[in-house]
Amino acid sequence: MKKRSWVVRIAVLLAMLALTAACGGGGGGGGGGGGSTALPAGTFIKTTNATNDIGGGFFKNDAYYHLQYLHTANTISASGMITGMAMHYRSDLASTVTCTGVTYKLGGTNLTAFTNTYANNINTGQGGQTTVLSNGIVTFPTGSAGAWATITFTTPFYYNGVDHLVVEMERTAACSSAAFTEAWLNEGYNGVVYSATPGSLTGLAGPYSQNAKFIFSGGDNTVIAKDSAGDNSNNIAPGTAGRTQMLILASDITGTGAITGMAIQPDTITGGTAIGVTVVMANSSPTITNLVADFATNRINSTSTTTVVSNLTYTHPNGMATPVWIPFNNGTFNYNGSSNILVDIIVTAWSGTTHAVDYENVTPVRLVTSGDPAAATGTVRNRSMQPVFRFNGSTMDTVTAGSSSDSYPFSGSASPKRQYLYPATMLGTQGSISKIAFRLKNASNAGAYGNVEVIMGHTVLSSLTTTFASNMVGPSTVYSGSVTIPAGMKAGDWIEIPLSSAFAYDGVSNLVVQVAADTGGVQNSIVADGASSQYTGYHLFTGGRASATGLMNNFIVDQRLWYSK
Image 1 (cartoon, one colour):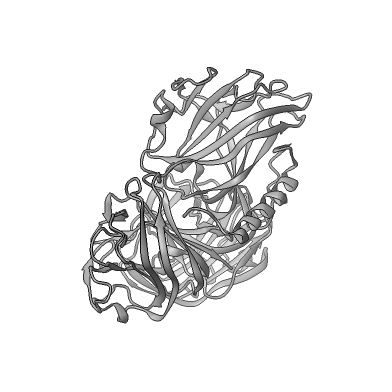
Image 2 (cartoon, helix red, strand yellow):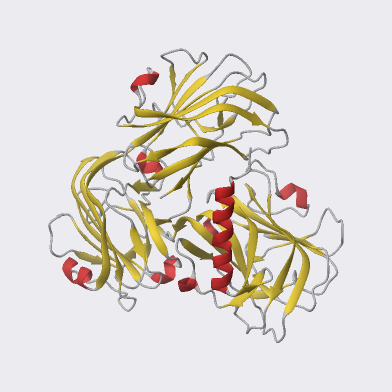
């Protein structure tokens, strides 16, 4: 169920080989100063912030070491495929250090502080661990304090950006010498558990965490650092009609390559339709860190301008969780990895209630706004409203962190059929969908399900009707066959179905996913969110797959879509 195709395996291997070469890796590790501009296209780095540094002891010459680090979702502020991470040198390293018997595991958790028992910090309902490096060799080249050593994973980890992340490391042999990497103190919670005793089930817990860079091979590079909420003054687009220019600094992006989607982060979504939307993105001069009131002047200081959205009308669903994706209907923006980015948004008209947008107070002028979409000048503001940028190569995840469940339709009785609606503003990009997955609510019950059929189709509907056939335009059967769910999968793991026929999602329409199956005698439930006001008309179900009509339920299920451009 969880094995990737050889095509995906080869693509991941090539990406990791390129990443190792770019970051100076050798023998599983490498050194350097981060080198974001040398990253392969579609890659970005997220760096955890460090204050009050101390020397970490995992890469010392002790015969054994075992530790877990907790990284909260807001500290990482990104999602996508993690293919490696880099460690920060605490002090100068005069000679090369080699460590053998190194294993890394990554996994999700809902904990915001660790206990001193390793097993209690994992398997909390956010999926099982993934071994990303097994009994490997990590080499630290010589370097000065402050340099970074990159550790490339042999297996990627798909991080959804919602769960907190546990990085577990175990070393079963002594390093050739000591390489002191960095951690930071005074987190306010226990972010580490560590022990040098082989076989120990517990360790010492401490209020500090790891200074690290996470290397994403495609994904959503969330860059906003909100310190204020709910600004709808000066008609900030796209929450109403008007024009908004945003400047996002290269230091906030740390990535390169194709940007295939963009999302704004409103404080609340009250519903509405943006009409005549145009979005222009540009590589702006890295020396320009302040915008001026004149919109044209800000555009003149930019190069490689691309209109990614042209005369688009799209609807914000009422009550939808943020972020809200603006469908790209006109192109992909190629970010050069070193310039600042100028985003110019024009909304000709707005139908509905305006919504407030979260922001960060900054000293430079990063925002210019006007309530007139045809205005030549606007009001300058010392605020940053940085969007989410999706770099090519990610998955499209819907992760609700909900407490409801659905029987998938892998039910223990009857022959169920389900339709699920996903708005374009929830998905984020166009592409060829090659695999679909749903998230287990509980640990798996082993079972085989026959005659499984997955149908996907576009729709103009914002709410499903009770007639299955009326809800899709141009439906396509993308999978037909059996599905086996093995025992041993953890709550929060993903049930994956590789599609036998890829679906070309246009990125602008809403998407309907229909799944039907013959009963397997056992039931496996998947995670759902039952916020009825938020997901009205998003779920249609019936107990008999031959039925033309079904019953409506107002919730949505967690899903993951693999796509490629």
